[in-house]
Length: 483
Image 1 (cartoon, rainbow, N blue to C red):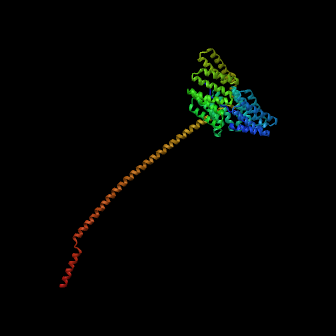
Image 2: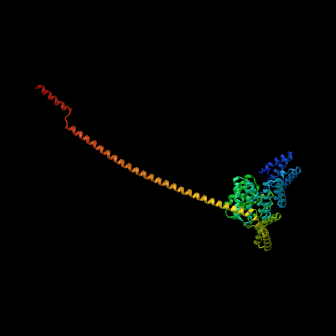
Image 3: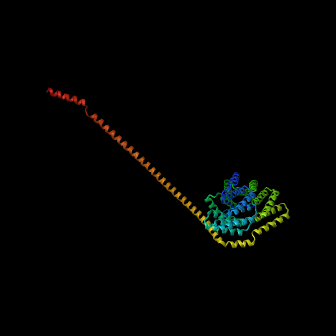
């Protein structure tokens, strides 16, 4: 099985131009250069233009223009630009796969940084040199230079560069199959870049986190990080990030036995790689395409791409890709029952593996672990991981507390509601009693009223009427008169 494309943050961009410009501005920059008289302005413009041309894939033209800017800077004895120019030259040479010249130019940049006593640049030069050794599969020297870089960056408190260096360390440990340690480094790097909204470096961190998740078979998480990297790369028009995200998404399809979809993504990546002229990535993606063809049972096509991968990686001294290509060819020839060639490539793969992980490098690596308090870094990171775990536990405890409080509040509400219901029922019952008593009183009042009326009628029946009384009185008055 092939490896995912991993990123190292390669600090070779000139400070004259921090963000790549659209390709349509190349002509305007050329016009600006043609009309520029002042040498300092010409150097700045040439460096900008060289970076843009390199990003568009014309490495040789970018190299020639950068060399021209170097000659002009040396002619006017302007050392302030030399660090940037040497790094740009190194960037061109690494794209061409010429690592010896890459190291020479990075060491020249390092010398300029020491002469000007610029600690930030010293750290970045150490970082760049370490990365070249990584590409040459010399892990002890890689770690040595990255440790030097990280020590200075921590002294300076430069979070962006600390995050970048830690991300590079994560890639190294991943290559050494120290995946747990790699994950801790990479998560810390990603968190810093995320906090700073540093989208360019987030492309790298997201791709690398995706690779680590993929190793752990956490495919959904891996896809999330790869798609995040692709989104950032597309937004920034970063072709290097786009081609790597395509290749890594293709690897997920491969892992899930979807070779047609995997092949489609790998070919998309290959197209961009060829536009960039990136021979190292072309060697890697050729091996990936071969693996997709193997899943499609097209071994002849797979063999063609593996031979291309082996040829390119040999030219650049990339032992890891050579080993992967040799193992693939061994497998294909064995499948075709061509045991003679199968044995040849099996032996080649074994020798390459021994070269990568030989005993002298292991001893050197062990001795390096005692330098610059590497153990302290690991302990610190482990402590951070433990702290993160504790934080998660505290968060869970907090969530449990919130749940318990919510349940308690709910119980109080239920009890209060029940009490209100009981009060309502009691009030309703009391109202019924009052209503009943009211009806009784009203009935009694009616009876009393009826009794009074009845007594009045009896009284009226017994007493003489007013007319009768008057009549009798009149009679009495008449009798008195007669007598």
